[in-house]
Image (cartoon, rainbow, N blue to C red; front, side, top):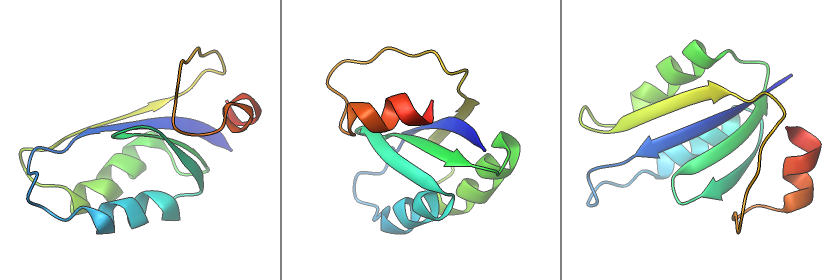
Length: 88
């Protein structure tokens, strides 16, 4: 298993991105860290994650997927601190 950070700039505020959220959750054990930032534990590789999620975003949206190294620092994230410590 690897841990990835998925960050998004979703530019169409009128769009319903609920299917995107469902798609992220299907990738594996995940938590929302910030407004448009998710941490996902999965066996899926970053390029496959990006290709998969590109089906759920608009052409002018932005997506970044990066593999986490295990070292991180955070302040006031949305998910539980213990979950992050256990999954990085």
